[in-house]
Length: 121
Length: 106
Image (cartoon, rainbow over all chains, first blue to last red; front, side, top):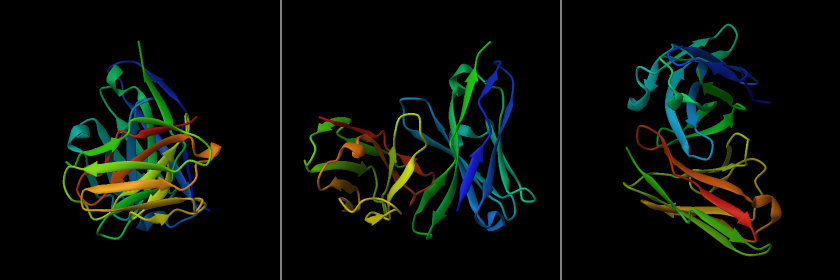
């Protein structure tokens, strides 16, 4: 079955960077799209961006350009997200999710369990 | 970007009651997708392409709509349905989510 296993919680200092991982199994990673999301507890879900594992091509939400960098390692079927210059506003739960769609619309059928990032001095 | 407005923000329903959640888009979209999220858990795909139930979703749930107006209906509320439901559009870039409807058990 499809599984997305995310890395553990992070406590980071303001100004630092953090790299989150999302290890996948149960499907062909190299021909799929992965998206990342931000959710502050009690709030809605924001789409950060997506990456096509086949060639590393990316697309970002304008709001997160310069904040997030998405990469993949096809040898280990793992997706990564780097978050830079962290502030307290970046404290949130971050999810990865496999993107599925038809061309007319895209949705997210499989999600990781989330990684809590806390930015605090 | 397309803004999705969900209503109500919060509601409570009794077991057996019929429940309808709505989602309005600021521009027309081809389809709407819905997710269920319980506290402390990741979102689960619930309904996709407006009316198709995701795997394992009970058939008391249904989805409908077109253009800018969509809805999720529970034919008969059950205890396990208490959760937050989000609508999501993937027709226009970037994908966006509504603010959610928190459904509680009365």
